Each structure stands twice: as C-alpha cells, then as structure tokens.
Length: 330
Length: 77
Image 1 (cartoon, rainbow over the protein chains, first blue to last red):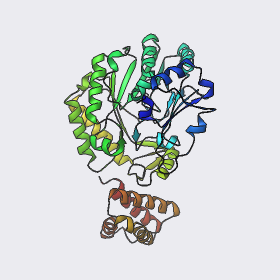
Image 2 (cartoon, each protein chain N blue to C red):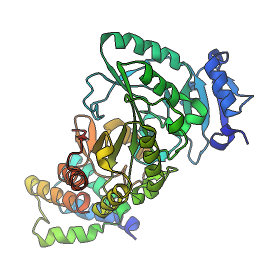
Image 3 (cartoon, each protein chain N blue to C red):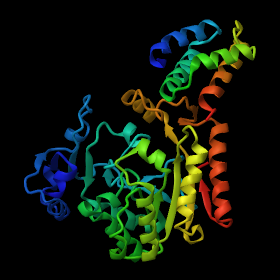
Image 4 (cartoon, rainbow over the protein chains, first blue to last red):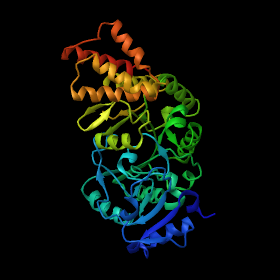
C-alpha cells in the first residue's frame, strides 16, 4: 500500500506547486501518482468538519502568508531573545484532545507548504541581524511526518551549517530510526513531550505511549542531539499527582536527567478564541469544558491548581536532578 | 444519572443564590465540567448548605458561594 493511503484519504496539490521539485519529491515519497489538483489549499483545508466526518486529506501548497511568526506569549523561548515559529506544516497526524490546533484549524487535513526554501531565505535575512531560534514543529509533529517530508533533516542540516540559527523540533513520536541518520548539531534540539500513560490513553489519541517516547529520547541522546524534556501541557485530572509521579519514576529509571539540556514545565493554557471553538466541537471533553480562568486573552487553570501542579513537577525533578535547568511558561 | 439531573441542579443552585448573568454562565460551566468528571453537584450543594454559604440572597454572599462551588468543582482533585 502507498504510504499516503495509510494516513490520508486523499492527496491534493495546488496547481502552482505541481512542478516544484519539493512537491514532486514529497509525492514520490508518499507513493502518490495521481493527486487531485486544486487552485488554493484553502478550498480543501478550510472546509468545516461535518459531524462524523473522519476524513483526512494531505495538501501540498505554497505558503501565501508569513514564513515565520514571532513566538506567542504563552510559548517558551528558553532564553532565546529572537524566537520564531514556522508554520511550514499545518496540522498534526496525532489527535490530542487538548491541542490548540483543534481550535485553530477547521478540520483534520494536513497541509504541507512545499516552499520551505522560501522560509530559509527569510531566515538568511534575519540571521544577518541577530541569532534566530525557530520552533519548527509548532503547528505539527515533523518527526512523525519525516518519511513524507524529510523536513527534520532539512532543519537539522540548516542548524549544522548556520551558526546563528538554532531549531527546536518538538515531538511525541516514538521513531528511533531517524536520529543516527540526521546531521548532528548542538543547535538542533529535539524536544520530547512526555505525559503519564493515563493522560496519553485518555487525551493523546494516536500518540505513542510513554515507553515508546522514552526509547526515542534515548536514541536522540545516543546520536548526540541535545534533548529537551517537556512536561507541557500538564493536564489536571483526578489523581494527577499519582500519575505524574509514576511518569517521573518511569522516566528517571531510564534517563539521567543530568544529561538532558533542559526541562520545560507548563500547565495547560489556551487562547480564549481557540477554547471557544474547542468547546463547541467537543461538548463532552473534560479538558475543553474545565471552568478555566481567563487572563489577558488566555484561559488557564486557577492559580491554586496551576501552582500546585507546576511546583509538584519541579519538586519531582529536583528530587531526581537537583541542578536541572527548568523553564516554566510564566 | 448526572446528565439527567444537570439542568435541575443548575436551576436549584441558581434559585439559592443571587447571580448576575455572568455568574450564571460561570456556574453553568462548572455544572458541565462536574457532569463530565462525575462530580456530584448535589453533594456540593449540600456541603455549601452545611457550611452556611447557601441559601443567600445578597450579591456578596452569592459571590462567596459561587467561589466555594468553584473550589469544590475545579480544584478538588
């Protein structure tokens, strides 16, 4: 079976991208010889999900907007002054119930902008002015799409060859085979989002379990990449202490936290508009329907919950690794 | 069972407090979350009665009562 058929119901290609080398390369990797030609990616991507529609299409297009955006206030910059994110791929193959993409995009389709070369040109100019830090997996999970796009390799290659550029590739993917094949650099950080298995099972549909993610952490570290562990978003559920403590025990039985570059901690938060969309789409979602506190355009847990969870996680970390470099989003 | 009782408990709580429209919306969201997570709102209501928060007819008292409901529903895990 062609790779694309395993993940998607249809493949669409914008007419203007048909002859691009990058488009041809991705179609070839996907094993797709007869994509449906469209005028604009929005003709498909912006269709609203009708009830019960579980179709997912792949769309190859050109990015008609900005190639880089400045990081949002609720995102962590990890001490980097010039922090951007790339919208190079829109949407994710995973189905995390809390993901802001559910509030941001109308459906489940994945759109790959094949003009990544244009993004790199924008970066060339920015790097003349100052060092640049880019979150390349902000709107997707690039590791999980690597067989299709090869973009992880491209970003790692750029990090290796551009001293004023660094990239974070955030992932929940359990693939272990890619790291030894990628160009290793201190400026390409793989950031693994880890959650307790209870949270994964209930709210991170389609994602690898904790064990799988830890194996991927091990492989990335073994290959020589700097690794970031992200306990973000932490989700408030019954017995959350027990679940997060169990996760930490499992993790530290395998990974020496002294060897990771840093650790990110953050409880769930989301922009008010995205939450409104999510509440409409998911009336029975425990996460979407939590009675959050609204603060400057973002919904978050009340302070008493937020601090209890984040402080608890910091305690768990400090018990295992007193000198750990931790970041929280506030 | 909770699903069936949801509108009823919302009505009862609303009748026992003096809530603005915004506060009603907040209470409604708490009731929705309680229903999904299996928090028994009737128990919450009884606790508020035992603790003297309910019933109340003034705005300040209702604010306190609503904050107490929030504590039991959103911060008790």
